[in-house]
Image (cartoon, rainbow over all chains, first blue to last red):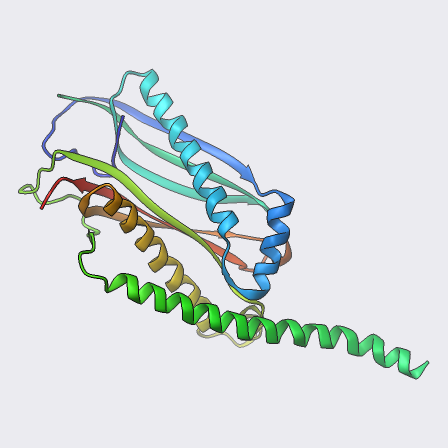
Length: 105
Length: 159
């Protein structure tokens, strides 16, 4: 599956457009990480635990989007956008969407 | 009795001062270190080129392209948060948050570039930023930490 946030794929033609596909995850931080983070909130600096957590969740969202694209027979997702929103204290939604297409070989 | 009352008032005050001092010194130290690393990385030769333009020029038609991204969650220290709270009374520039966002954006971009370089790419097109507030439990609705994501499409196999 080719993923790209361009509207085209350089050097290849789009044979068919299949519409919007999307994937999302809602993740909560666990207490241990939250306590570690509240210490970090005093000192400042990067919160490694959160960076990893959000990265993993984003990969999960991408995986769900890919599955959806595969199910409708696409071989690429173009024009991908990410969006993040925090739902409540301690939980974030990671959302990814793009347009599924079939590329000519 | 008098000593007990004095202690009751003094103890929280001392704790707050300790937190402020810790935040001030560690925050300054970490920020300086971070900027040193960012500048060293940004000025390293042979970097991946990054373009915010929507489409690559037609003369570039690489055999492969791939989505790359880099992200970072970064937190402001106790002292800066305190200063920002004071600043919000009078309005104006929030210097302490400006440098926080600047560091986060540059760091996220560097991570994206590192990922592109690991794939053997020379350019990244259509770079977008995404910023989100990650409110910690202790933050009480204030801006505690920020997540910045940078993403784009890497063109692989181009000179």
